[in-house]
Image (tube, rainbow, N blue to C red; front, side):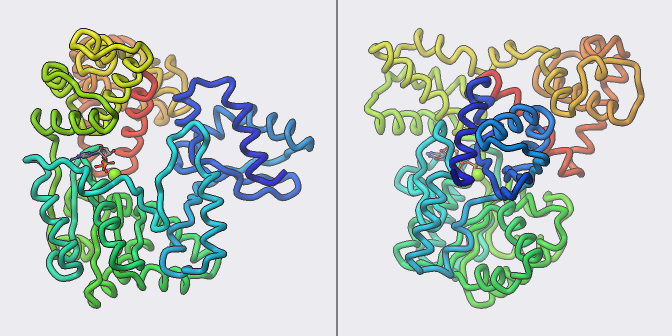
Length: 461
Ligand code: ADP
Ligand code: MG
């Protein structure tokens, strides 16, 4: 058995004891990176997953590994690592042999429970196209800027910087540019800033800094997703600064996305901010009702459904946050009606979405749930969070719990105080303000909070 097969077998064991959502949350994009004698390194996609695998799944992973390999495993290490090989591939290897191996890896990369992948050789998802992007008020400027870039790459808006909240179509636009321009050049590189960072760090470690440079600096089109994650990473910023300059000087197009405008990215160098702002900065906002209806309608038709207007209105009104959620709602509706062989009505849709819509969503999570999830995340107990102890490792999670209860459930401060072991309402208020403030400045905290949120939304969906 090779590493891949061993890991697949381990996943098979682990999956039995977990809900599907949990399984995907913790094990998607994991793999065995190194397997030597009794030492194993498991590659994971984020610090967050690493923490959980180390703490919560240690035993089951170890015993499955031992069972499957028939040998004693002494040490298991977890390391944040990305396996997507496209990054280094795009411009160096038109070499068929290499592409073939990469494709093979890619295939196994995806755990069988996840969606089939449409990733092409540039690392772009071929379903992200302009023709299936619905334009509305909130994204028309961003859309127009992207079109302009396609018509005149490297000339009009360089760089193009697109920002906005999650699930609003940034990656879709970014990749649509890549897909469109792939008809003109094959020197296209799509990557996330996390991947860029990882590749950079890895290249330094292995003494291959030169290769790294030549890959990133020899493209016609560089697409960097989620640049906000470069905040605080000085070496990476330095490298990116030079990459940027070199490409820019030779009129190579750069497009970036971020969850916030350049100036608001914490811990990012001023010289990068000024580079990011030097071309065109556009935002994508939350879609209005009409746009949401249009998106739903189009996606429904693509799947062979046509919804009544009232159904469209109901869904569009009740799914508030973003387009990704809208797609999630549609998936549920389609699955339900296919299974029951019935036409969607407002009544049935209401029922199906009852755990997804805004009011019910906050109804279904209680302050206790939030406390529990925060506790789990920080590997402490709910009791400790609500206790009187002022230990630093408890204080911050406690404040985060207050923050999230307020933010997500809009619970009153006296009630929050009560939930947290009978504390005063001013204490709760203070905690809320403190986290709101620090969240803006501290990217790590911000990311932790987002991960926790994801956790409780993934647990109720
Ligand atoms: P972001 O990168 O901003 O978090 P994505 O680009 O991943 O968001 O979009 C989330 C999902 O919503 C994707 O499946 C994308 O195809 C879809 N989507 C976003 N905006 C639109 C749009 N205007 N028209 C059609 N689909 C969209
Ligand atoms: Mg994105």
